[in-house]
Every structure is written in C-alpha cells, then in structure tokens.
Image (cartoon, rainbow, N blue to C red; front, side, top):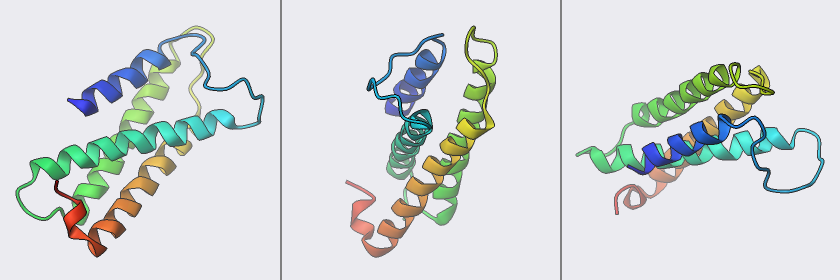
Length: 121
C-alpha cells in the first residue's frame, strides 16, 4: 500500500505544470537531487514491501528488480511529463532517478549481507 501511495504522489506532483519546491534556493541541478532522493525513497519502500512478502531470505534478484522497477517507473513518469504543459521529458532526470534507485538497492543489499536481521521486522 505504501508503494502505491508513494508512486501516486510522484505521479500527482509530476502532473503539475509548476510543482511546489522544497526550497527557494536557485542552485544549479537542485532538481536532480530531488529526483535522486525521490526515487531513492521509492526504491526503499519497494524493497521493504518485497522483503516483507518473500518467505525466504531475499536474493540479489529482489534488489535488482526493485531498482529496475523504480527506474522503469521513472522512465514512464518522464514520458508522462512530456504531455504536461511547461514540463519536459529529460534523460538527465531519468539518470538521477536510476542513480537513486541503484544506490539504495546496493546499500540495502550490502547491509542485508552483513546483518540479515534488518531485512524482516
């Protein structure tokens, strides 16, 4: 359920021509940081949901699938933005999405290998 709410929030915000910004700073590439953090969060909740649903110890494939699903959702979101007035589809945004997803998946995999207790509550 949390994955659906998170993904839905991303969709709603990307449907706005002028989404609200977290800060008023005019830093270059700040939006790439937002993309990185947003898709890091999506991957986090997706891995958590997948770990809770598997009966055995999660495999590397679970983490790869989570990163891939988040990245594909980012690609679909970028395509969706091409149809929103004053928004554009950006491969750099997609790259930031993929980097955030990959980073969380790799960190979680490394933590899980060291401390398997952290995977299940």
